[in-house]
Amino acid sequence: MNTHFQLLKKLAGLPIFLAGMISIIQCTNSPDTGNSYSGEDQLFVIPEGVESRWASAENLKGEKGKGGQANAGRKGSPCITDFKNGEMRVLAEAANTSGMVRRIWVTINDRSPQMLRGLLLQFYWDGSDKPAVSAPIGDFFSQGLGQMVTFQSALFASPEGRSFNCYIPMPFRTGMKITVTNESGTDLGAFFYDVDYTVGNKFPDNVLYFHAYFRRENPTVLQKDYEILPKVAGKGRYLGCNIGVIANQDLYYKTWWGEGEVKVYLDGDTEFPTLCGTGTEDYIGTGWGQGQYANLYQGCHLADHEKFRYCFYRLHVPDPVYFRQDARVTIQQIGWWGRDVKRDPKNADKPILKAGKELASFEFSAHGTPKDQGLFEREDDCSSCVWFYLDKPVNDLPPIASAEARISGL
Image 1 (cartoon, rainbow, N blue to C red):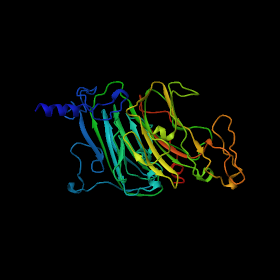
Image 2: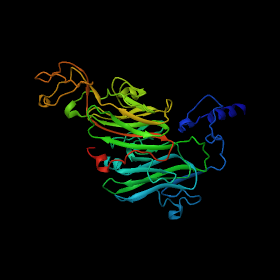
Image 3: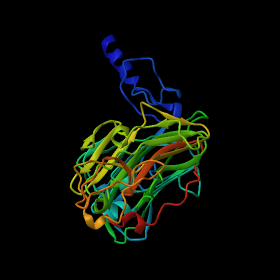
Image 4: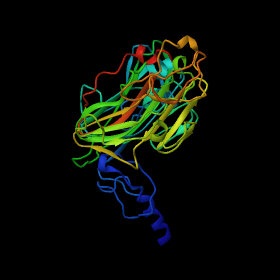
């Protein structure tokens, strides 16, 4: 009996990282690390006043005792059907209650690039008119570049490359609304989903709101670092990002594109950041290039070395990135030109500029052979979805780009 109880206590010690409001459940050998609101996420405790809800096509409002009523309860409404282009659907909604979104699952019958970038997810907290989350469905769930792959991380998963799963905890104080809008330019036949959440939660004052934001630059601007997270004001936590790169082979051939450093500007940083990485593949925990792999907190789950398309992610769970005034996150577009990369003479009028303030040009022979090698400035197609927490239900980021701009070229 005592052995079984100790096992339960170890399971109960799956600690909740409420310090920045990121409740990532993970195993620990410490039996006494409870969470700060009455053991709510301990497996053998039912928190007072908290109720479970699932919103789906079988129970659109997640109402008590009203699930699965269509067709006399015999799977009469398993999904949204005939989802018209231009139409918006509410996936989940709660009013006049606190709560937490805990899991979101989606699968759709059309997983083409235009649908993955054309279905726009938006989340609203506490009755706000401006969304805290604004991102295409693919990129939000860490499936970038309009392409599905099989992977699993601590916060997202696609077990067989046909579905979307998110496990990020998303608290709200007075209500929430999650919508999806079909901006793909075509109708969608089937949209299956579950939004699993609780209502009646009691939170301390320092609990933060979840936000997500998508960007794309095609191409990026020479020597202007791509902004993963444009500057946001407030107190919060940078949780991580998913980045997609379509490297410019027309100009740079198959030169290595990922020498750029990730820089995190915190709390008034201006010219130079507080946090600085050493290179793109270094940021996601690998080295000397990027192959395909997936890890709990980092991965490169798409690595197409022929098309030079890459999608990779980093989750700052064990290494939190807090800010108390403002934050901005960027990545440089810097590559490496080696002596083995011969240049096509037809591009001789387009200089290859060495990385650095002077922007000196690389020299090539008449046959396209480089006379030296080193770091150089690039312009590529970069896109990203960033996830972060903030101390308010809205952010000051600009509206998301149009569907046409999100989809073009994929």
